[in-house]
Image 1 (cartoon, rainbow, N blue to C red):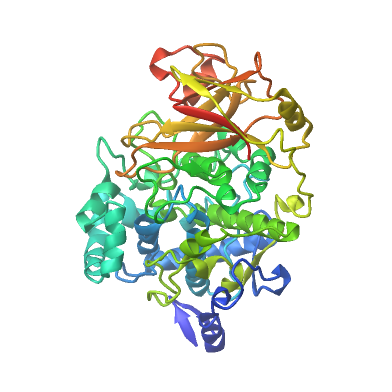
Image 2 (cartoon, rainbow, N blue to C red):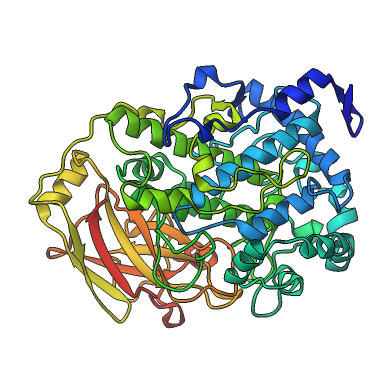
Amino acid sequence: MTSFLGHSFSRRQFVGSVTVGLAASVAPIGSVRAQSAARYTRYNVSCEKGQEMLKSYGIAVKNLMALKPDDPRNWFRNAFIHTLDCPHGNWWFFVWHRGYLGWFEQTLRDASGNPDFAIPYWDWTETPRIPDGMFYDALNPSNPPYDPYIKDFKTFYNYLNPALTEYWKGLSASQLQQLETRMIPTLDSLWTQVKGDEQNGAMFATTRYARFLTADSPEMDASTQKAVEPFMVRSGLKPVEFAKFNSVQTPSHNSAPGSGPGTFGILEGNPHNKVHNNVGGVGHIMDPLNFGYMADNLSPVDPLFFLHHSNMDRLWDVWTRKQQKLGLPTLPVGDDLKKFENEKFEFYVNRQGKPVDQNRAGDYVNIGGFDYGYQRGFGEDIIGQPNVAIAAALSGRFSGETAAGVGAVNVPHALLQQHAAGTLGQPLVVQVTVPRPTNGAAPREFDVLINAPPGTTAVTPDSPYYVGTISFFGFMRNMTGDATFTVPLPQNVQARNGELHVQVVPHSPALAASVSEAVRPETASVLKAVAVSTW
């Protein structure tokens, strides 16, 4: 018998689970194993099986917290893998997180003592509140089990720094080069970002502020509920090109959030980012430098992270199966495919805490490599829907003119009519370009308004002028330049004199709650460019 912190299971189970190979290394790129053949099932956390998995998850989290910090499987050490390597705002976002969850799921399985364990997913479209059970014991970072580690920054630093110091000494030249690109060239620079200051904010949070949604108030706020509603998620699943479903192509997975323009895909820029921020306290409190873990790159400290990303991975799987049903590519094509699949991910560790051999993005395009499948959830209905062609005369991208933060875009009336009738094959979207946050105290969220009266700078999500709230996830010192977000237009949007008038204003829930339209010159529109396109 092999034990993991007191939980025993047979050597046959242990060895058999360790030797699960990555089928992606031999399966055709872009193929997907039939879900019925998968060894493990990621269940909806709201169902009975999902709740059973949650109990095993709680055991695993507590056991991994108890590991010494020099063990890479330690709960907090694993969170630093995300801090050091995670891509956001580029087209390696989905594939990197698939590998990260896949390897850690095996560690969680061992630590739980449940040989059938798989990370449940939080389908926030169906359940726009923190799932039942996620406030219990070690599943909530604001609970007492976390006090010995995060009661204050000094405790956290003294606990982890000796182990991280030894870890840093063993980093390869390639790993150090990637960290240089991320502007984390030294361990001291990492701790500077974790601790934060009056300019950069903090990745670290004390136990009290580790998560902002509570058992007494578990519901997501109104703007986040809009970001996860069926219309938004279906729009994010409709693109038929990988680069449009995903976020923008960049020089490397460490390049974003870096310099230069970048286009966020609908699913990353809206539900993914907004859920992170809402759980982490963005918009909850007046102090813009005091957020919970989910609001920044140490977000895996909060166990909710893995349920959130399990759902994001599930949506990628839905999109992939939709593409296959339509006979369309599931990955980049041509020369872009090689660049995409050869990107190196060099910080993963396996269930023994050792570096993995599968360190290319191409190793993780297939969920079969980790032998899991998903219980059906929201979005499955899009598979098998016909790919309705858009009339060539009506398709395209319509760039607008921007003056004093207000953009004007001419969109053909016939196109708006088709959009309203739901007969377009692709959603009609507005693409807005805004400056990235320049420091940790700068606004991270912005409301997109269309045809609002002049001077309007805040509305509630039920306003006829509200389109959505775009969100930056986290803050890193190399955030520079502008970023472009894609938001689906409401089907009932009406052009004014043949034009759509667009503004992007800092999200201000307190102000918007007090007045339906507020004129505040100091919160004027930050829009730099705008376009409408048949996505």
